[in-house]
Amino acid sequence: MKKILILLAMVMAFGVVNAQKSKRASAFNYWNDGKLDKAKESIDLTILDPSTMNDAKTWMYRGNIYLDIHRSLQPEFKSLAPDALSIAYESYKKATELDTKNDYKPQIMISMLTIGEQLYNEGATLFQASDFAKAGETFEKAISLNQSMNNTDTMAMYGAALSFEGAKEYSKAIPYYEQLINIKVNNPLLFSSLANIYSELKQNDKAEAILAEGRKLYPADFNLIISQSNLYLQQNNPSKALESLSLAREKDSANKSIVFAIGVTYDMQRADSTKSMADRQTYFEKAAVAYKDAIALDSNYFDAIFNLGALYFNKGGDIINIANKLPLGDKNYDLKVIEGNDYLKMALPYLEKASKMHPEDMNAIVSLKEIYTRLAMFDKLEEVNTLLKNK
Image (cartoon, rainbow, N blue to C red; front, side):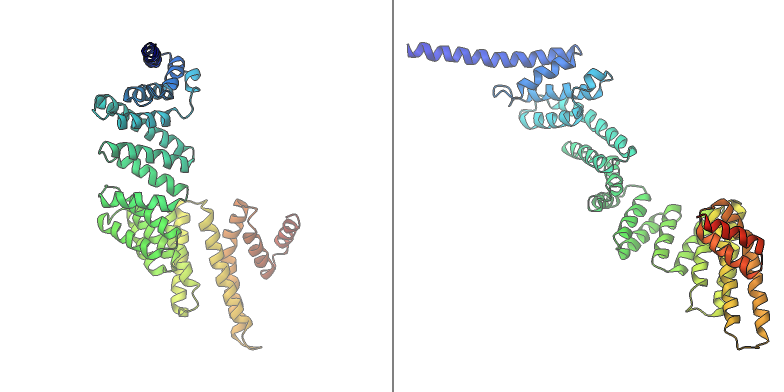
């Protein structure tokens, strides 16, 4: 009797195993027929059952089904699993672990390559949608997948670096940029991007070093030159910034932003009270020329127009302040006042145009009020006062 019971239990167990394997076969057949909803329903049961959950074939089938759900253009299938690509990836990883005899290795590798392409594309889509953190994580899956097949996916690494930089997760971005530089990927943007991160982290020595390394490899690269200029400006080192900006201008003489930046750099030196009056005058003249050159490239370039007006305004104000400090009755007083007013007159058309271009800009309006008052332009002064009351 005991033998009969044991035999009956064995038969029942065999029946359960066969039933689960039948489910797996059904999942395969449904998948093969394009019935992904039925295929998913069947395969999800098999990964929970002890008789099939440790079989590489089960997980390979699951990967196939979920990969096709991800790739499906039919909404009813696409909606079956919003994270289908990740599930497919994990399924193939599990299948690889269980496939100790490499029975399914060729099939899994082909599918994994497809997964890698899909992960990269999904990362790119997330990046374009500005979901940088999730994009970085998705690119990392593509990297890991390729590493498991002894491949180095430099495009996915670059995608991860850019994504984590966009998410301001700099500790994750830096290693990818460093790896790409170390394996000598031919891309000068790697150096400027890494330098920008170091700059954000206030690690200016590292930023300067990585830009110097990049400039050695790509001495004519425009972006590296601009990054170097920006770094020097942040470090309040206008003389070095001018070297880089001048080189950039040689390469792109029609770039108004570079010409404007040159003007700003000369303007910074003009405002440096530690420099001699003669040097400051030279910088003033060079700043004015650069701003005018930028305006010549774009007659509606607000920043250059306003800055040129402000340059003349500040110069006029400085001279009038000097006049006001002269002793009472000094014969140079009237000459200084006239000279100062002349600079205010030079500032006037630029500040008026800037104010028309951006009526909300209070700096231009306040400067104009000062000029109208100083030059006794009372009609204009009344207009400005009315405008200020309505602000």
